Image (tube, rainbow, N blue to C red; front, side, top):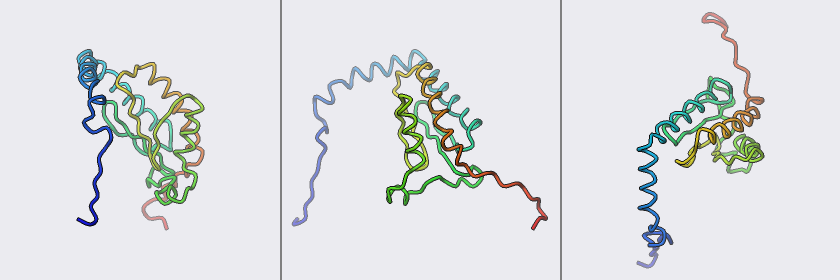
Length: 160
């Protein structure tokens, strides 16, 4: 009882915050029923998976619908990252930050976190919006491509 800690969120169950929820749910229903969610979510996934084919720095693309992660790596074979959590803690420049800075110059904000980017656009995004984003992301990833380790040639089973 002497070391009691109580906390709460200023927005928890606040009527003003909750007021738009019914309208938002109705909009979500309309987007889903119109086929927009399935169509645009599939398009986003297709476009993101294309990055793996074009950029050696892309180690993985995973997700579904409107929530994706794009992993960047220094070596695709070993999955060696450009940076580590220690780099982040020590304030070292991160590859995701370099790419994010280039994206900002191109009018795109994308959340990068040490080894990957989170791609989670709003549900009202269009194919044209995705194309704009993808053009910028495609160009910005060239920064990391330039620093990818060259793949090691296969020396054969009996090589020493």
